[in-house]
Amino acid sequence: MDNITNTTNSRKDFLKITALTGAATLLNACNFFDKKENQSPKSEARLNKPIVLSTWNFGLAANDAAWKILTNGGRALDAVEAGVMVPEGDPTERSVGYGGRPDRDGRITLDACIMDELSNIGSVACLEYIKHPIQVARAVMEKSPHVMIVGDGALQFALEQGFKKENLMVPDSEKEYKEWLVKSEYKPIANIENHDTIGMIALDAAGNLSGACTTSGMAFKMHGRVGDSPIIGAGLYVDNEIGAATATGHGEEVIRIAGCHLVVELMRQGRNPEEACKEAVMRVVKLMEIRKKDLKDIQVGFIALNKQGEYGSYCVQDGFTYAVYDENGNNLHTPNSHIVLKKEAKPKLDTLKK
Ligand code: ASP
Image (cartoon, rainbow, N blue to C red; front, side):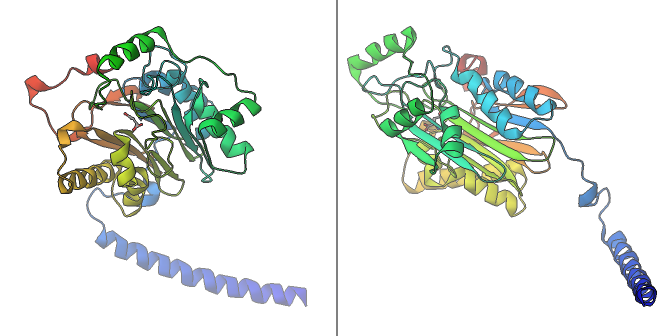
């Protein structure tokens, strides 16, 4: 009886397979006539992985640390955390972590967030005295029932988790703060070092995406001010089916358009990473125009990476750089921008960031 059932099944299977093979041959033939020259079928597209990219010139050193993890088969999440910890821990980097510039009350308040391939998220904002806010953000993600903890609560949580309370004010910050107090003028300036963020996104060898973003925010900001960097969807977004994006620049403008979520959604709709970043930047431009604000006063830059390992960037005005580490090495890129400064007026990138 079993044999008969098997034979019947085998015959059914044979008929099924023959029919399917016929259909597949027919489909292939249709595709053949349909196919544009040089267009390789999607399944044959080569994946560029592992790969990591991050914002500004300090992204180069950050990428080095991330790459070590990625080339050893490590997880993108571990790579981005280790990567952004490099500028966070460097007292000469004046816009992130230790060495970050203070707010108008002389307090150094830090923002950071992290997101993995399963859409686990963690974030801290307005966190004081902790050198590596990205690690606290990860602890929020993995060891708390919440996704975002701010201010005193964030510090309390960090101390409970065993993080060390440290003075983050370096002598240069103290000096600049005293100078700033003379006029006490708050003027966010595009493209100089009074605000920069390390945003990092990576695709690991297993094909998974993660991202991290960390900053001291705008120098001399109002106490309690929070920018885009710790806000999932604004300063960072990861969708493991589509891609990842992170941002730098005037956080108020990035939040206004839910920037990084927008970039990822545009990639979902078929834009390549640069096109997606450009469309998001043009949304910023449009809203600045509607509100009759001078675009030259701001900078916003997005970097994006898709699931295939293709990457791109776009920014409001010249001056932004980003670093990419893949099989071609660790290289600095200058993205296209909406406002192209005249050659002679172009700021020297080296003077913007080491
Ligand atoms: N996006 C950061 C903030 O607004 C600053 C920056 O990247 O320049 O806090």
